[in-house]
Image 1 (cartoon, rainbow, N blue to C red):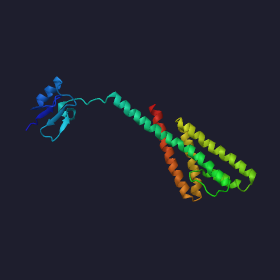
Image 2: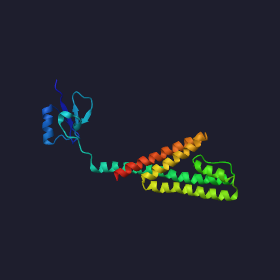
Image 3: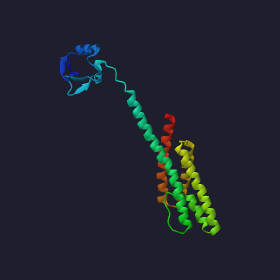
Length: 209
């Protein structure tokens, strides 16, 4: 048995049932468009007319305002990810300096996010007395400054800064792994993941803008 059709008109009233031929005539007349609600007798729900292929209606284009809005939302999300990743370079620099100050003043604690290389510098300096401590602090300020520079450049979506910074931080994590400091090594892995997320977001932003 051939299916019949009903439509829901703009006045809220139902029209039909009619045959497929009559529906196609309504399409040609403009009485049925893509968003017209249609009930087909062999279905159990109302559908947009465009969802019924036999009505031969072209798919509706997505309004430009909607696509633009979705694109802007996606770019905003990528920018937030990129900035979040870049911020970790600042954290690495700041907390490494805190570790150095704590070590040089004999406080007996450190933060796991800090750099291993600065801790090695501090360890050697502690054996050299006051002059060595001053040199160690200067070296650690320089090392931290390099990571601050990576952060500044990463905020500007310089992919090479992300890449070089991640490579250096990975090598720094190897120091902890070799010392069997697995907690610090694991935290390095977490920070590297966040940096890589920022790197990928910066890649997408650079290709989109």
